[in-house]
Image 1 (cartoon, one colour):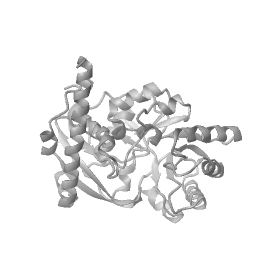
Image 2 (cartoon, rainbow, N blue to C red):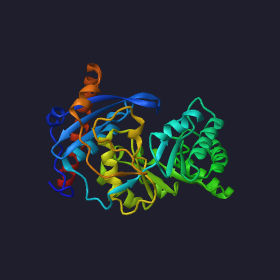
Image 3 (cartoon, rainbow, N blue to C red):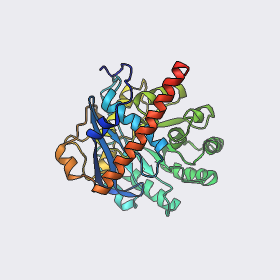
Image 4 (spheres, helix red, strand yellow):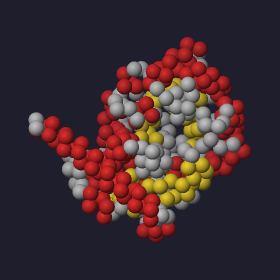
Length: 347
């Protein structure tokens, strides 16, 4: 079926289970509090899809991730407008002495995202990490990601200080949309040249367009899986009317392939994308990992390798946990699909 054709109905659960593989991949550095990333991979008629909502996410939220998985494996992707996608390096909340080691995994890049506001760390830790990045890459664009870790006064104070290294933008400095708007207003009034990007305030809101209507961000960060697929993300960006940065959710190359499809299909791509995170894994599940080469990733398919799937197979009890989750979340999607069809027919 052509990638742009109308999407078929939700595939039966049995089809997903038949091609499901659960793996646990070791990380090179601690990221989002974990040293191993578990994910469930499925193979469908259009290729491979990845289902990897973090364990704390409820089934309703995880249903969007499964919709994206099904799009990748059963529907395919929209036609691309570009074949190479610029990507940034990602520096977790490591000590400054580890920054060169982390950056070396990404090769040459023109942009770096640096994690800040980590629990248990201070603003001085953040500043030292940023200084180490700037020392290593004097000409790179640097953006920071706080994951909503500050309140408004702390965010304004932190970004005023961190702006000294030259910041492209600050991603989700505070948790709420109202807070983002206030941070943006205060920074502008003080003449602090830091743009505000919304991430969680897009992908975790029931209404992902609320942040745009509120004028709370200068740009939005979009991730395929939490938004329910490439097509839904494209529609969101079009409606939001804001510049977009495509990012990942700590995916294997299979999930990164979906992110690349989104970045390739956007009419405009003004910022390097946060799709280089395969470099944070000790190993991937494909023999041709989607990692950056000279600051960009060439668009190509990702095929899981049977040997790597076996080598990194999750423990039996974790596999059962993920398969049980898949069954529950598929039921959620099936209910949503039934409700949409009833609504469409006036039932």
